[in-house]
Length: 64
Image (cartoon, rainbow, N blue to C red; front, side):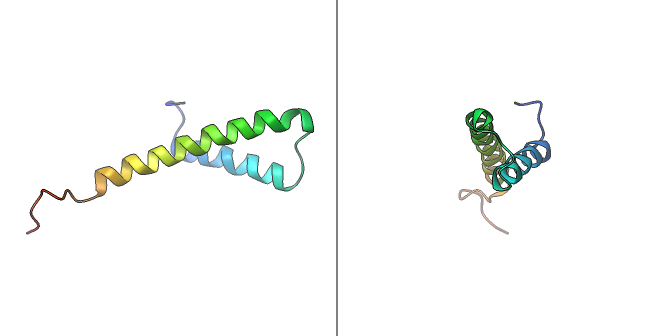
């Protein structure tokens, strides 16, 4: 999953969601699509948390 960029993961997740909303997923594929969406969502959330942690000011660092 690390080779996938945030944008690629988000695009794939959006595609899966559109397919689900438009009822374009067969019953047989529903479980696999749901599992993939969960993996992508977790990946995107982690990327955002990691970025937020890098950008958040450190409490121990004095502000000028």
